[in-house]
Image 1: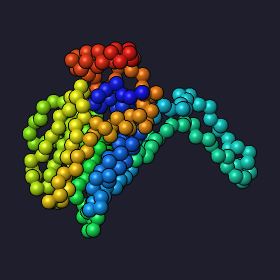
Image 2: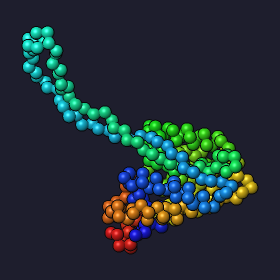
Image 3: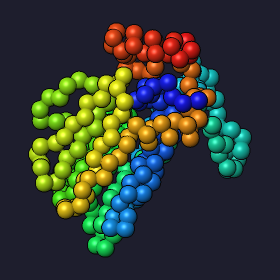
Image 4: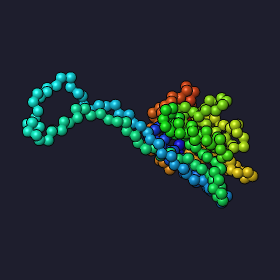
Length: 262
């Protein structure tokens, strides 16, 4: 079953689906680019591993308010034997860290290995202040903007804190931002509403080579089918946070009813 959405499906923003989606989108972008940029260029994946912290507050044991103490040492200790090990009176837990693997795409020149274009796909941890991946991404983003490489940023998440721009842009659910090396500090921005199709975006190369088109909508459509997301999403439920506006909610409800999913 294809996605009921012509653009980005907000239900994929569920945490249990997003990591799988992210892990599929980067290779799909790599594959689509490599069909058009060879032999002068190639696209490859670059992994980044961070950790998602799961807080566990449950305490499994309690120290009693009243205790009974033995006034004489145990017989084995009094006799010079080995002291009895006292079991810990309380069990707790430390925060559990699970590895989270994220991918970006690099375009490089074949003959010189020159770094030509960086393509970053934002994940929730990149937009969560205080998380190490948030801080790492801000530093990486600054390094890209200071470099001689082009920088393409794809944000298909409605939630979280968006990376900063110097001037305001129209409010939208999703954004794609392109920083061409020769045009900085000017950037090109695609604000994408929930009801809109995902755009065909340009991926710049070295001059005088023309941009390569990347059909982001077609990539997401392919991933939706490959990931069997239709089998995993219950469209009778509201989409994940953040909440939609009244206008967006009405549009989404009408669309899903039209598709027979509500």
